[in-house]
Length: 426
Image (cartoon, rainbow, N blue to C red; front, side, top):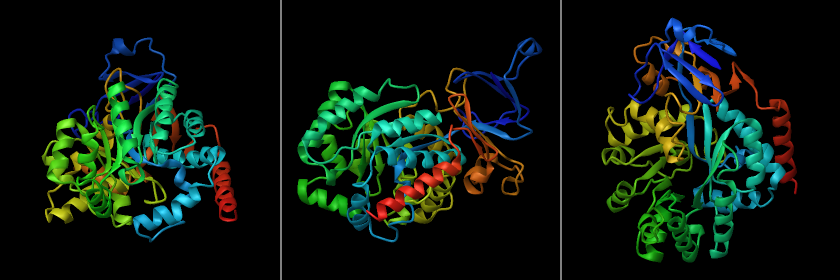
């Protein structure tokens, strides 16, 4: 058992309020939240008593859209339009990947996730056995998202993966998904809808990321990507749309009525000049919002603090309204919203019985003082320098600059550089 005491706790059920209470963890779960009595503490053995020293304990961030192993393309194919970046740079290099490369490149991403207080990734990629091995060895949580494209022959692989990875590990689950409308034939999309109905399962997919994507879908099918997906039952059991930059009122009504999460990726959308998603409008309609970085080839970092600031800042500019997208909504999207978009309902907040996915935020730093409003400090002035500790499933994976994932960072850095070197020369 681990006892966190003598600090502030942001549970997130009641927004960004903090309370001076204790949190105890037992194995992978939160076992106690509150003010213990002398009787509670009597004869209680803790493996560790963590004195917060006035700092903040809160739920960890969850990255609701990423492609972790794309760390090998960080700063490799920048300053290009999305379609050129994807088809001329990314896809050709990805063709050179194999399982071992994905394994090491994923471990590099995990190091970065942990430094930014993130304990779970909604990851869409391939070489899944090696990706899963990297996550489970590191103690990191992940929801795999189906990434199929092409024709309907890929459906069997998607279904097999759905059955294979759900239940494989407490840290791993799998959601039905496909890459995007523009990389998939109509029969494949229709088939995913049938799988969703068969398993009564949500589906996640890139949706309306660029104006070109939406325009060409309308030219081909006469409808937006969202309406096309809805016609095939893709969202009949909920799910997630990644990006959601160019959404019509009808699209948003579908999201609201089908309880689909809009996963916002402001850093990637800015860097690729894809546009600014209408997050304020989405929020006003009662649609659930999650937050993700997208991959490290298009962002280029995996920093949830930067995403939070961009989420609120871009909405204020787009709406010409400094009150747009307030900090509490942003922090909710990065924690509760992202967890629920990933169907991690036991990882969303701090409460007894929930998973012990927690972070400690250092308030004793210049950028966090004075403590007028801790939640707003995190969103507007916070950074990953404030992350003192990251815990996933009750295990401390990062603390005060040190990693505890079974591998030295230097080894991972060396492997990553060897991998990109060999790929450039092949």
